[in-house]
Figure (tube, rainbow, N blue to C red):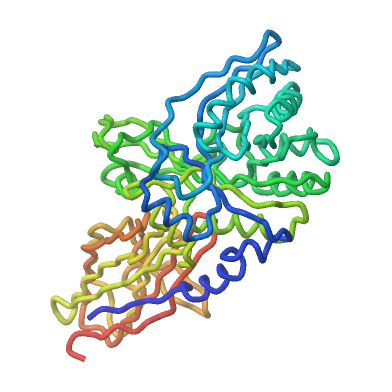
Length: 458
């Protein structure tokens, strides 16, 4: 007998539609746009079309980097990919900038070197100059490049740095791109908190300059997986690795050798992971668009998510989110009865979304009456807690006093399934019901209502 437990999918969908589906309505500018940065290469034509059909207005493509010094500017062009698969959307080239102190380089020489690149990309004259670290010579260099190209130049730096440096009205010829929220360390920027980023964005808005915001969704992983891609489901298995929360993500220590996306890792090796799932991205977009920011022109998703298997939000999840799907996972509990006093429990997630990694925040609760637990096997579940409800509060108990058990799920993967839990009661239970709760990447919890389960022989 299968018991499907609902959760807040419908409710969350309504909240999400109101907050994040229509950025033009939430933003004061009718021209507010959404762009996507291609940090992992060029996708296929179908992906480009899917992005365009879901409101993405343009793509950002890294094309090289420039070193700025007192002696001049040294521009290094990266190999350019075949652009035919992304011809359906406008492309804005991105150049990383490195420098120090007040050195502002030679904007005219750089502009002359860059002009052929812009023509080959079919660029409409725009350019993004991005710096992982702010230095005083950066704005003069950007202003000089804008004058040479006679085209707008966007300057992308962290929101915290930008808010501390930009004058009222901004810099002439330079548009602002504040990198905030998301996972900035994956881009090589300094870590920051959402509170610091939101305060910085408020200061940027107060300058009166037009600006965009970039939300980094790329994962930060050390060591990086191989080309086959990797899933957190591997590391969340307690037989594969031990887990503890870290200062900037999750930390796993391998118990045995594994293939990490095709890259061999040895036992005792440490793997640190920081990801942005769809729930966290949804929260960040909502924080960006509410309250209304008068001078916000739009936002950039920094890093097109990769297809499964991947770490954090997948491409399927991202496209579904842009299409109006809920950012939350769901849980379906399946119960069978090998005998009148023995129940077997499996859970699955029919969505491309995932839970957060949590030792106690993800669980399935089985309530029962008229009997006690004689034996329990966890199977693929991560742990168990026995308890009972007293006065509306959960209380842990010894096994013999329990009227409920909680089976913990360290991680519920996209389209994931866990099975093998077997609860054996002393006698056939009079009644059984199931509820669940999942922790999300934005720190919130979702859950399903208590649902009765048919008992064998009743």
